[in-house]
Length: 161
Image (tube, rainbow, N blue to C red; front, side, top):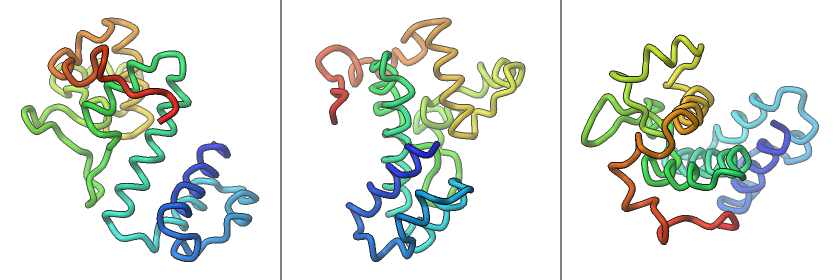
């Protein structure tokens, strides 16, 4: 969590200037409550800036979480552009199918019951990512075949981006 928090703060500082976050980086690095520190850092950002900061944090989290499975990073990019929530704080939903939710656009109609049995909430970042990983381990990339043109070979994002 410390690495992710520090990364988010530095990303926000580089994008928006350290003065605009109104939080001193040293305070965040030394904070006992990392979640509260990140929340405090983004309070002064506009809704659009918060969405960008969230996307960058999610992308960084996924690159760390799925370093050995870069296809999952590409799938998340194609499915949601690394977004879990919109600028109003509501979970994002699919354009074609409103039952698709979050980073991995997991379909609630087909997967909500299983997610609940696994004690995962598809409406949270952690739950959506964990269920995406579970689904990938069970079925490979098949659940995301509709977006395969985006994430298939030749269209993948390098790990260094």
